[in-house]
Structures are given as structure tokens and as C-alpha cells.
Length: 634
Image (cartoon, rainbow, N blue to C red; front, top):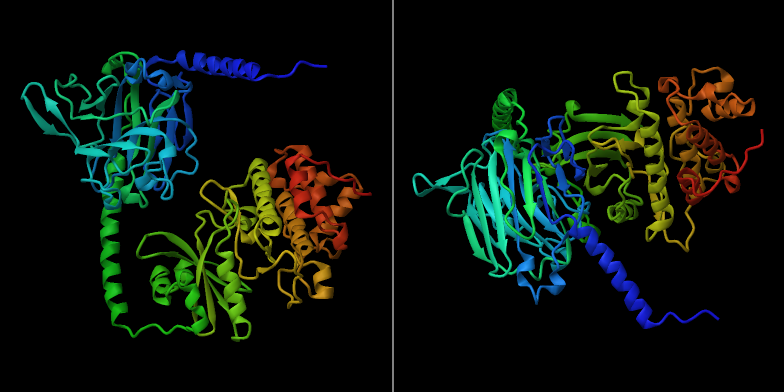
């Protein structure tokens, strides 16, 4: 009989694990990057990157970006033993930052030096949250981070003092203490202002004495010696914030619109947990990129924005004089108030539903690009014709329910509006438009196989969420390439819920009128008139073949036996000539096993008998490689 694993053994094992972790962390008590970061192995995520000359860029000046860079190894702060050695909490760091392009007309949002328990900021938001937190967890004690922010935008809801300040942040971005940016001139013996967004390097020193609980933050232009007096000196106890093992690094974020977006750089960095950080040799640091041309662009954008603003004011004055827009309101809609947009808001957002705002149109309505006037949030607005009020209450109820869907591969449904015989649906705008444009429009770049495969897996994951993982079953009923939208990173998101229906998991889908697109419609749906999960799987199969072959599922002008893509693929599969149907624009650059898997799965999902098709959960397993595809008889 094996000896029992006693509590003593467990204690010894725990101690061993802790000692190994501490040993790894202790190796990184001091470091310096005085020649840039080209050979550094920093943990980067978001928009952060290192240029060829070693310059660390956390963000460029594109809106709504966030970037992080952390020293790769954790630092041991030995907090658990700080009662016997309070000074172990001490640290010192020296670094050089630059925020550009150097004009108040285009700045934001800011950057921060961070000491954090974790380097995972995937749920954090950009803009005023600086890539550290989001609205729901801002200030939560379990965040466990200390930060010094360099903020160039005034955010009243964050308690900012101005648009050029340095602040101390504990577990959130509402600063515990902040001061206008500046430095003490040793020669003039007085304080001078310092513009954080001047586009030039600024040197920063942060020194914390754990024994005295004293934090000093000092700034100066890059070639100025360290001032005799700090910009900010305050008493602060970090023992409740810092843990035994922490990570040190930087976070930055840009604003919600182009005019509140700056590039954020780190030129050099030194850190010491047990003494004063080594000084940086400014002459050895990498150079910042020249931005004279960028400034001209900023000026041009400012002029264009000013002219656009004037036109908006004139247009708003005209609209204000128009009679009130007539909408359809019924008593039962009162409970949906937060999800309802006013027609006036959407009219303004789409500039009167002008054709120049038109993103696309189809048999079920037109889609317009819009910008909400009160938040500058970009949206897609779809106008759907609804000839009768019959079933409207149930339809709106389902639309509002589907607005609660949350998945990274679904386009978010924001709300609705009713006017006359129109139902208007409001979605998040996907900047790159629909997938079909990239498959069939010669003016668009060709998507690589890697990009296509990621899009396919994303759509499959979204369907799994709709069919199996949400509180109710959601039948999309219109899965196709034109309803798969691409975000700024070309990630696929399933959108357009105008035809979707939902039902309880213990219920059955109701008989419905035939809707959908030829080539994607399940033959069983035509026969029985009942939408099912299997019908969505059939459409998904057509979608798989469409993406891999670069051809629409239904081509009326093709030879009779090739009108339906599934017939062509099936015929090529049976004669071992599957490569004949692969999109020639891929030029042979694909993983054979992956593309054959997609084509084979497309055939399985397109089986005319619903009970022989895989469920979407099985399809996801096949795509992820956790299960093997069954053989298809040839």
C-alpha cells in the first residue's frame, strides 16, 4: 500500500513551488535598456511594437488602440516578508517617453508606467481607461496594480484636473493624486511647465521608499539633468497593492476619435528593486521618427473637421426647424425603451439615409453607415420593410432579446426603431465590410488561406454560441458570406439578425415562411417550412465551400450541372480532383489538410438529409482538430 500524502508532504511541496517561483523572479531585480529595445524580449500585446532602430512604440495615432509592453520576467517584491523588512517594497525606475504628434489639436489619450500582478489586459478598454481597466472593474481592489499616468486628455468622469497631467493610480484610473505636468529648473530655481504632448523626449524618474512610504515622481526634458526637486512627492502605502511577484512595464491608449489619438513611445528604461535605478545615456537612445508630414496631415484634418463641423451645424439648424419626425409607438414598447433609438437620431447619424452612406442592399433591406451624434460611435443601420403589424410585437421582442447576445464573433445588435412600415435595426459598424467583397471584388486584396480559415472557425464558434450556449436557441436563418462582416483585424463576425428567430430549449421551432438565399436554403426547409438548427448547418456548409472555392453557391449562368457549387465540389471529390475547385487566387498557398477538411465538412453539412448532417458542435470539433471527420463515400 502506498504511503499517505500527509499535510507535511503538502506543505513541503508548496514551499518548493514557492521557492522556485521566487528564484525565477529574483533574477530580474535590476535591468537597463540604454540602446533601445531591439534585442529585448519584452512581452508585447495590442498595438505595441519595436522598430528596427530599437524604438518601443506602444500606439500609433489610430483611434481606439491600446498597447502594452512588460519586462518578460516577474519581479519579486517579497511583500509577505515585508513586516520584517519594509524596505523590500522599495523600487526605482528611470525611463524616457515621447508623445506625439506634438499638437493640442491631435492628442491622446495617454500612457502609464505600471506595476501589475498580471500582464493580461485583454478585457481593458482604450480611451480614458488607458488600456488598464474597463468601466465595470475600474477601481476594484482585486486589480492589484500601481501606475503613474501621463494623461493628455481631460476626462471629467475620471476626475482629471486638466489635459496635461501626471497622476498616481491604484487599481483604477481615477487618480489618487495628480498634478499638472512640469519640472523644477535647477538653474532658475523655479518650476516650469512641460507639455507632455510636445512630440519630444521627456525623462521620468519614479522612486519609492517602502520604509518611509514616500513616492517621488520627477520629470524633465530629455537633455536636462535630474531636477533637485520632484514634480510630485507624496506619502503612500503600497503594501496592500503590491504582491510577492509583480510585473513592470507600460500601457498606452488612444482616444475615441482621430483628433484625440497620439503615438506613444518609450526610448529607454532602467529599473532597480533594491536601489537607485541606473541613469540613462540620452545620446545612445534611438531617435524618434520625423513627423513634419504628419503634422501637416493633422492640420489638414483639422481644417476638414472644422468645415465639416460648420456644415453639420447648418444642417442641424435646418433639421431643428423641420417638424417632429413621425414614429410608430405602442404601449407594449415602453419596456424596450433603452433599446429603442429615435428616428431623428438615426436620420442624423446616416445624414438623412443618403445614398453616399449606403453600404449595401439586398432582398431584405438596405444598410447604411452612420455615426451617432452624441458619442461619435460608428454604426450600421438596416432598414427592413414590414408591411403589416401582424406579429410585430413578437418580432420586436425577439430583436431586443438578441441584443443581449455577446460573442466575439457576432456583430453586436444595439437596438431598433419603428417608423411607418419600416423596422430599423442598429448594429456595430465593421470597418472592413462584408466577406463576400473580399472573395469576389477584384479591387479588394485577396484573403490568405490562414485568414479564411480563421474566419471560418470564428463563424462556426458564433453558430455554436447561438445554437447551444445562449439561454435560448437562436436560428440565424441567413448564414452566408455577405452576412459575415470583417473588423479592423479581418476577424469574421456573423451579423444581420433581421431574419433570426429564437425559441426555448425545451420548445420546437414554429412553421415559418420561406426566407433565405438560393444556394444556402435547406431543401428540407422548402419541403416542411420549418426552420431548424440543421437548416443553419446546411447554410454553413454552403458558406464553407464558398470561402474555399471563391465561388458563390448558386451561379445561374454556369453550365447546368455546375449551377450549384455543392454539386461541382462533390463531383471533383469523387474523382480525386478536389484541387480543381480551390480558389485559384490562393495560388496554391494553403495547408492541404485544412482546405480538404473544410471542403469535406462543407459536403457533410450540405447533405440533403438533415439527420446525416453534423451538429454545429461536431463541426467546431472537426475544425479545431479535436475530432476526426467521418469518411464520405466516393
